[in-house]
Image (tube, rainbow, N blue to C red; front, side, top):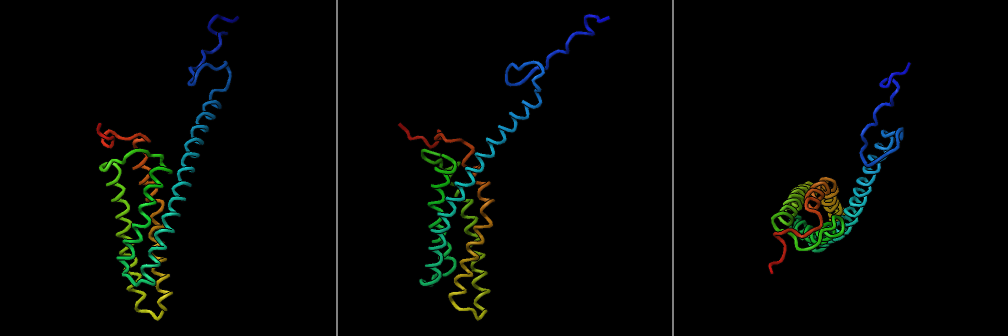
Amino acid sequence: MCGQTACAAPPARPERGGDRRIGAMPDVVDRAERFEALRAVRTGLVRKAFRYGTGSVVATVCSQTTFLILYGPVGASTTVSSVFAWLAGAVPNYWLNRSWTWGRRGRASIRRELLPYAAIVLGALCIAIAATTASAAALERTSLSDGVQTVLVAGTYFLVYAVMFVFRFLLFDRLFATEGTEVTQEAQPKG
């Protein structure tokens, strides 16, 4: 009773990723491929976040040490202490993030890389100056010792950068990852 069309096997579904046996459960294979792609992205993101965090620890140690020395024993203002502490952290942070975290090599493009980086870190600096100035002003009216006030103001400085950590990671990821690891035309030496 079988007509030719009634007993014929259903047409094979076109598969992505090459030939597969009929009945090989293409949905499971597609899900496995998507899972593997997601795992690769996640692994890269975790590696990048770890490297960014490690570079940030180095920058934080440089920055906090500078702030504590200048604001504490030297007696510099919060603005001067914040600026020099920012410089002490921004320089190693830039080079570690650019080369190690995002794998960028070659000369940096001033317009596409250095200026946006400077805008991001200068924005954080302005927030740090405002926060430490407000913190120092509020603490002057207390009976806390100079040592305790120094630690609290330095803690304010640290807190600003701790809060900015994730925001800066996302911005730096967009900044450094946009052009891959190659030197841009603009940044190549003339020859």
